[in-house]
Length: 401
Image 1 (tube, rainbow, N blue to C red):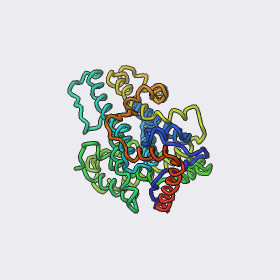
Image 2: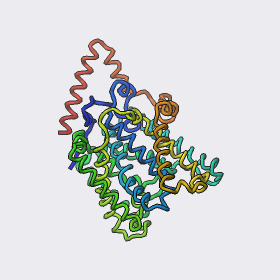
Image 3: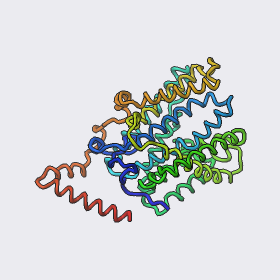
Image 4: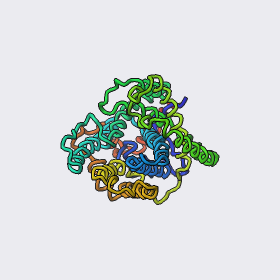
């Protein structure tokens, strides 16, 4: 059984140790400036967010095409699990300290409040639906992920403390799938059913990512993905795609209660296999889209406005050509290009007051950080600080052994 690491190790690629993005792991701004990013994880985040946007663009088109429905089910089986797993991997350093909690509020809570308010207002204006409520307890469309990430990351110290975190998380997800009474507040059903992927990310070590990127795994991923596509085509008329959303219990999907836990285990296994196939082909080198990995939160939160806006204005109904194979390809390319632009540095800088606000005025000074700063400025402070860091690292390594 995997054991959660207490602090991030070196990345799986051959690049130097790197800092996680603000979207995937909270951390001090100074650390983000001084440490380099890892191309592999930035590439993985960008490619995953492209798949998210493309799959969302298929929702109004997939009803008339079995092929498109199969592709939709195939992508939905792993695109969010992959994104959540990487989020969990970069949450390993969360320890509940004041600095981490501050970053949790500024990097997740603030964007959630802003976009949870913006999406209903957008529907009121564009769709002329004045009855749509604004509720921070009922995540709207895309914002459920921010709500879930806040809860998952806040519970990270618990998962790092228990002896067998992954079986425990799987048990919780299985129980949630047979419990229709789980509150809809904060989309708790999704929070609980997607929990194992986040916990698995907490348990991951760099060598596991190196293993899935071996050429033997890459070559094996091709026939596995092909079989999964064929199976998805077969499953279209036989399986309820609602299982892939992880937001309903078995009873709500119209099946006996015992099917819920079975489907949770089956989907977890299938999603992990497809996630490994996806990660095996993610480039480890710096590419033209590597820098876009830092802006995936912006792409995720903003692309919904364009897709929802097109839906509200009836674009997919007024243009029947979009429901043809060529139309679906065009929509897919437009979604990929659109989310790519939304992940770009100019958009990220424009949205920084919302996604990366400083908000020093809202928090008390961190006494520990100030003490470290004073110790570093004192004569011989750098050496004392280095010795303290070495001692702290030794304690962590001993605890992880």
